[in-house]
Amino acid sequence: MYRYKQCRTLTAAAVLVPVMVACGSEGAASGSVGPRQPVTGVEWRVDSLTTGNTTLRAPSGARLRVDEDGSAGGDLGCNTFGTRAAVHDDRISFGALRTTKIACDPARMTFERALAAALDRQTLTARTEDGRLTLTSGHGERVNLTRIAPD
Image (tube, rainbow, N blue to C red; front, side, top):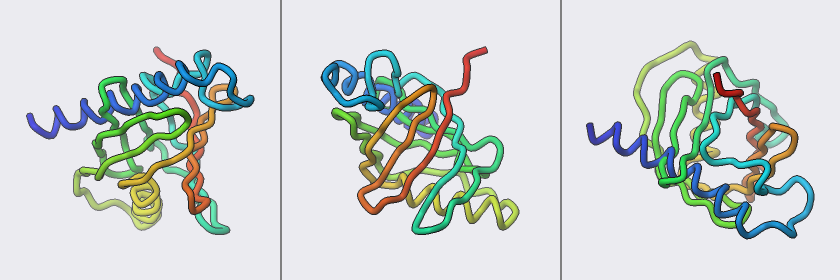
């Protein structure tokens, strides 16, 4: 029950961050998080992760959701995760990730470890454009996501 509550809380935080950004960024440059392109309350499919000179394609099922209540969670490619997230302007700060511990094939585990490192206790810059979200770290790591259309 506690893990479920944490996951829901993290999802809400992920939603809250973009809403706060949207409220204070009406004069922001094109492509920034804005009122027409919310980040929170949206299910995002993880497409790829670029770290250094290497781009890793995400396994199917990798996803992220940030909710308005400060919770965030999703799937790292093999294991699910939950965390807290705070949105301020165009930045999303993630707390420590809590994950399940299932072993998968080596390619999934390689991607999962890289994505977990990119999100765990990190503050990332969020940019949205045309249904896409890019999260960029201060070290140049980049997570590319696509909005999943609601059913």
